Image (cartoon, rainbow, N blue to C red):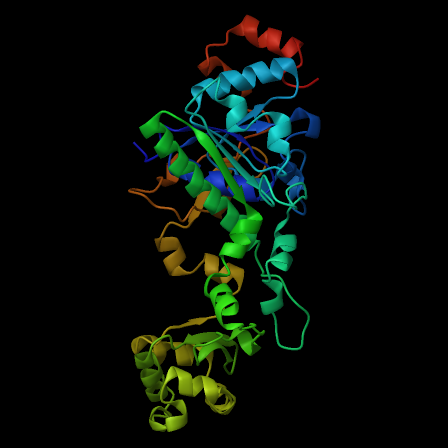
Length: 399
């Protein structure tokens, strides 16, 4: 069995952050029953351009492999009855909605404990379920701005910039998956469920880590650095070679010693201005131009070979297609293929979470079509034809 194969999660998820979290739970074997609201025609991720058609998009495919889709209007009395039957059979209810919406929908622990005392209610919201911003919608770019990320991203003198990927969303999804898993473990141990109040805001603030510690204790204000340089380790940044760019990182003194040998400048290691991390930081405006001048004399490949042979941390700055076709990417099984009725044989990025054996290539399922599993999930609850027809007639699945 997969690690979470005995876990059933009813998920009111949408767009990116929430589905990203449950994507990894599904890869670990959890049953993810994705509730899609007929009032909004399902998860908005189904309609994200540019690669979208009808109720399918490559964006949606990226976040929803190995899940089931059930169309259900939980705000209607009939839909609520079905939802509560699902809760009785589930370990967790997972959602990513605005902070005040879980209470309005009645999906908090206090709303569902009478139905299933061991249910775990994990809410991933923009700003959390309390606090002055709790009613505000939270999106990745907004959180990157509020949490200070954009102030330290980009070149000095340029405008603030977001990261190239939606890292707050993705990190928030991972935090929610961790919280939910811990909650289910505790509920099975104690027989009592709980709320998991996870927010993108908390995630973004938490990821300030040492930058936050330095600021609060020493008044340090981080500045944007040229060529993505590390704020305290020198050299550790992007350098331009004759035909492109590479990253070189001397995170230990031994790497600095090796680097000076590789580039043919061993005297730099003996120079008292560059002897230690602290010295190199003080004199970085003298050191970096010397390194830049040398590194421009060869191609990226010509530098990578001797640096890798000397175990100096380094890498080419790849384009996305280069990263996805890197031999290590393929050897690690990070590209998976599924068959889709609209897109045919398609590739997507695998979950990096591994506990025991990862899913085999033929175990991956494409993202579900809209409402594809409504009937099969209801039948797993014991619904027969008459009961399904009755629920449909009373508006449980929309008009």
